[in-house]
Image (cartoon, rainbow, N blue to C red; front, top):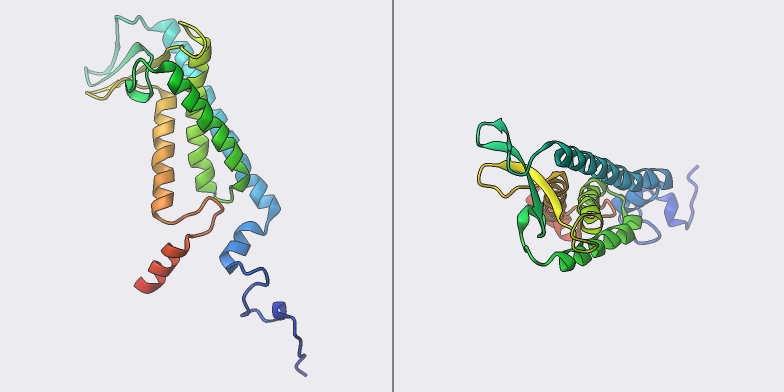
Length: 203
């Protein structure tokens, strides 16, 4: 005997009652999984922050600014540089502005973290957050003073400007976030409508 019902939820082929696509419902329908994904962000950020702080402490304590350590000839060296600019020594002389911008980035990432449903977005934002906080610590606690502190850079590769762990994390995180955006992966774990339509058309 076939049971007849007016409840659209009884038909597996019927669209969801709330109007969301099936993949969107799946992405947001597991609170435990959502909390685990959100937790990835602070874990990644903490790992980057600790690695950045530890390496800077070691470099300041062991490397003379005038005597670089040669790792691979003159191509890869460790040299202590005090940077008043942004990542890779850009915008030198605008230390306090860069400090405010970095602080705003940190606040923005924390505010957006509640919307995270994508592991890769959590990793990308965690990299950027950890790197931003790592350099902010220098801005606030190193000479010549709060908001004007110079960041410790120490990795020199060829002609590339000297950088540190935090700089690398910020750049890698930004590249990952751009790639996710290009491929249509949203922060909530769903695919953008434009990307889905193009994918269907190609198929």
